[in-house]
Amino acid sequence: MKIELLAKHQHWLPTIASWYVKEWGQTKDLEETQKEIENLQAYRNENKVPLILVAFEKDTLLGVVQLKIREMTIYPNYQYWVGGVFVGKQHRNRGIAKLLVLEAIKKARELHIDKLYLQTENRSGGLYKELGWSAIEEVNYNGEDVVVMQKEIATTIT
Image (cartoon, rainbow, N blue to C red; front, side):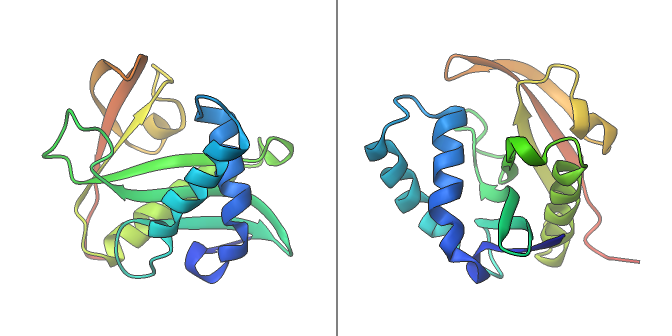
């Protein structure tokens, strides 16, 4: 398995958009998928946020993770976020999400980011708690109860 930037694998944009619309979309129709593809164009960066990392084996996309800017409007001071963590159903329970999040943290360090945030519907914190993220608070955001978490990351790699 490899994890690389979407910028090098833009042909997977439609698959990623389809995954996101099926998982988190409102109408789940073709028009919404096309709009998501357009939105994800901004994530084709290599050395600045926003960006997407993709996990793949040969020509099969396994999962994705985003580094994004100001995901939740109620937290305008929280700048950098991990989001859009998704692994295809047939590839789950292999530790891919964990590897994607760890790679996103590594990329954030390379970009001199010292703190990351995320939101999760898993009230226990799940994978993120296991990886050292701390819960800040529980909120209802856009009709969903979520836990907002943060992680201090060292910007120097030892």
